[in-house]
Image 1 (cartoon, rainbow, N blue to C red):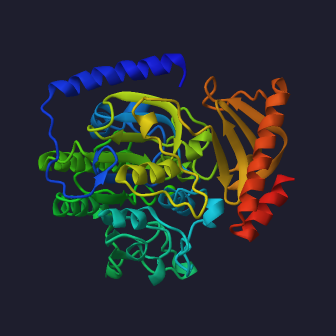
Image 2 (cartoon, protein in one colour; image 1 turned 180 degrees about the horizontal axis):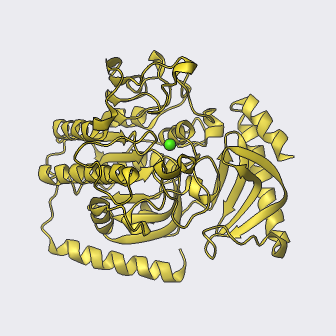
Image 3 (spheres, rainbow, N blue to C red; image 1 turned 120 degrees about the vertical axis):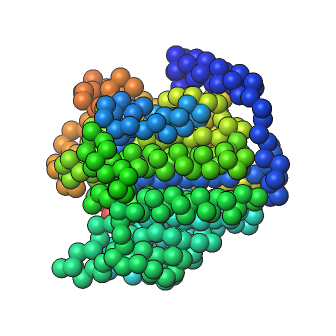
Length: 465
Ligand SMILES: [Ca+2]
């Protein structure tokens, strides 16, 4: 955080805290969970959109999508402007969120299709599995996409219950032998084909039911919307309402959903002690043309490791612990959610494997710079770019979406001056290029030494030469 932004953060945060002090404190005394460090265990709600772009809400400057509920959530919480998912497609991104590890470590480097029999390796420890011993009720509502055969379903991976579709909402290609999209409750298919128009509404209703049922104990709700992944679907109440067209309608229904959830928390008196996070699994799917979203000022989209592919909207609201109306320009990732939530719950972070997530609670509170100095950009098993501080070095470039090629010359960007990655400064900074190349080589070696997923590591190392 630079001086200006730190001052701005503190200013916003101080104003917000002063405002909070004037309000009656709605302490949640009904909690019966064990005491986490520093107080009552918080509840967690992780709202994870599918393919929503960095620019697809009002506070990112979108002119025709209305997001009054997300705006209000931002007013009541912290917005991180440099928040990354660990991959620019669904399954690897979700694996990283729930394990705190780069996809290269878990081996989930590509999306799962209906014909696949495997999922997130059973040797991985998931966030809900680790929260449960702390007394948390856990629910997965929405798109799973980490394996849909019986051993890999959410109910086998730490979630008490599941309601949603097991993979992407477009994976019903007859010519590939895909069945119609199934809607599942726990381990059973309850509707096929699933009526996708009502999915966002039904996910919201299920979420509120879960919150109500667990209001007197700590809970973790993972609400992974199926939208705005193409094909876009929206309920009648929202169809035709946005000037942005169907995509805008879909985002506005997701915005409504977030508002309903926040209202339910406040109605039950547990809003203050609930950390609600809103973010997306990857950037917009722009090859879908008008059906895809926007990365705003960022270059690139889903399927690339330009910023637009992996930098996503992020809002956190947790009135007990976080300032209101703060804008945080620090670097953070979905993997950090794993570690932060575990620390807040009082759980231990696994020590028997490498965890890439770090605790960013102090960052969210504006108490310090992010402990995350570096971010490694992966496309499948390829390390395609690295960020250290404000500098980002690309080793490979996108030819077309989903097609990658080696760069003959590396590209270096100063993301503070040039978040749109328009101005390559590699030739002016040969030392920086060398240093970042060395860091990438070091990381490849560290991954290799950890000895996980040898086949992937061999490929990673071959490309590194
Ligand atoms: Ca996605």
